[in-house]
Length: 347
Image 1 (cartoon, rainbow, N blue to C red):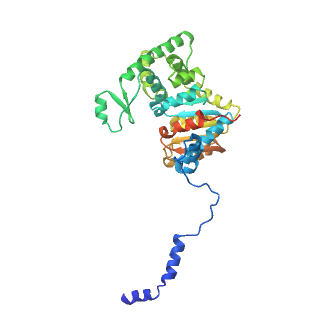
Image 2: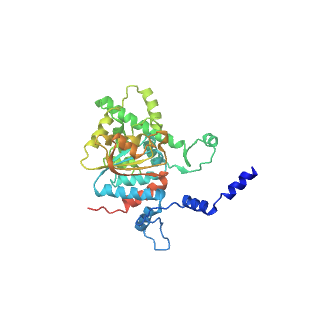
Image 3: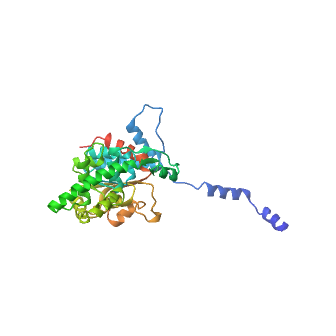
């Protein structure tokens, strides 16, 4: 063993080995001359919002994707694209509700899709607010005190008392009309009428009704609305809602748009799938922006990226597109500020 070691050292050319190591560690690179330099905003300079937005382009990571999304949504508006906005109910639970309301009030978007919670929580907040709590509060103590938790938001049960009163009055009104005229409303028609009945300018529902913007919630029964409907149907078993008509209404809206279309999907679930699927009927959307934290590895709808949508024909292969991997309350307010509020359309 000793002689072998000595033999090894005798044959060891340190310079040759080190030269090889250097070659491995510092492999010659190609020139990237002309590529954008990674650089963030310089806060020593006077504040300039548009310059700050431009700096996101070279900041890297998801800041760069946010920059791309802002540029894409500005392009949508330049080209008068019909914008389909889909979002999960937690956006209405949070303060993003007010941002979505602004978009609807000012007709910046043209088609809405959400889940049941996105409808009912918009209504509830017109009676009483949600409050900021904590992620760490034990569930048992909240349950004992009649408080529900969504993330770090607290929603006391008394909010649902107001909601139930409102909905019972609403169901009775629809039922009486159905008995008189035979009219059976679809879910989206119900959502439209809820905005009228609510008559509150703080509500997304109200502005969708006021501006006649189609608003769809295909899973309308999956929440407190379904709870109120259960008890109402028990008392009035002949009361009916037409689910099938909304398929026609949603697809017809999509295929009747003459120009380009754009998708903005916050989160996943039914809203994201609905606005993508109805664009399939027109051979895909021309623009697509996704904002969520989900990954495609599990095959979920939320995680499905835009390339997957292209494979289904829901987004065009040449579409301008980006996905921002972020919790939406962090980036959507800035996205709307830069992409809609402060942007002057190029006519």
